[in-house]
Image (cartoon, rainbow, N blue to C red; front, side):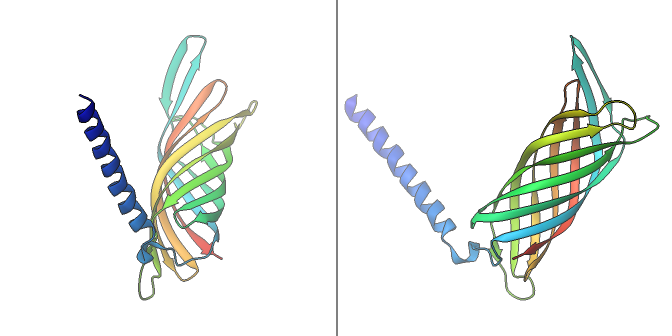
Amino acid sequence: MNDTRCENRANKVGYMWIFFSLLLAVLLSPSAHAQTGRLSAGARLDVLPLSQYSVSESGFNASSDGAFAFGASLSGEIRVVDFFKLGLDLGYFSVKADGASSRDSMFNLGARFTGLYPIAMSGVMTSLNPYGFLSSGYSLYIPSSGDSSHGFWIAGGAGLEMVFGSVGAFAELSYGASMFDSFKYKALDMAFGARLHF
């Protein structure tokens, strides 16, 4: 029995060693290194075709669809290592419930954590960067009438950036939720934008 356990442990260690060796080889591959600077600043347009409001208070639960929403965002990032960036994200969104007569404003400010796999290219395009990200932070909801609400937001998604020298163009898809005292706002976000790399 002890011999079998020792053999199983040895096999697990062997598999783990192979996995980490392959991972290290990928991370150290020259084609995987970004051809851009460590700092970047970007701007994007956000389109929110699908959204939902939900209320949960004192045992009462209800939800309704949101109308088409849109916004714009700014971001700044620093590449900590070749495959990870840390940044700040500031976004403004014009939103409303389906059937509402006026639009409300929502501001999101938070941290953005991005994991990417830069692929070196030849020619005009210097790098192709598929990436995934997680963002979270403070959210402020300002209705057209009534009191504002403060809360927390979180979003996650993926995107693809094409880099031409120091300029990048990207598209990304994400899903996020802003949580306030008496309601939540959830939305699918399609974004298109550009970045400058320094």
